[in-house]
Image 1 (tube, helix red, strand yellow):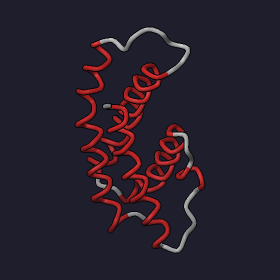
Image 2: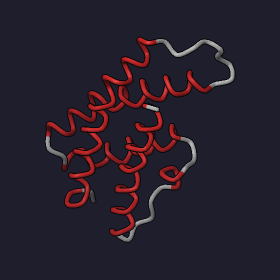
Image 3: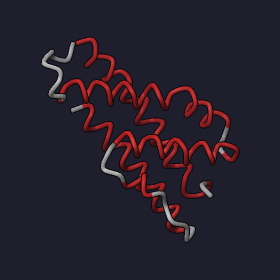
Image 4: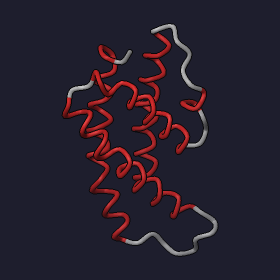
Length: 121
């Protein structure tokens, strides 16, 4: 469930980016609307990296330091839980790590969503 919640947070962030790009009469990358979460995550990182010069230092640093770790931990745990090649159950440690990371992922996403409307160009 934490994987689904994390993906929901990321998709809400993606929607905010797509809406902003569209409002600027630009065409958003097709990768932002891909069905594969990794493709969406990679494209979001590209979009935010292009905007870093206009970000407050704390937000840019948080993005650099944590984006990859946040999304990879939750994505890997979710893939391991549902992948046909793995018959091993998800360990309590993996679940605990995902639960610890989720609030920080949600905070970063929220901070980015607050920043986008008036700053994303």
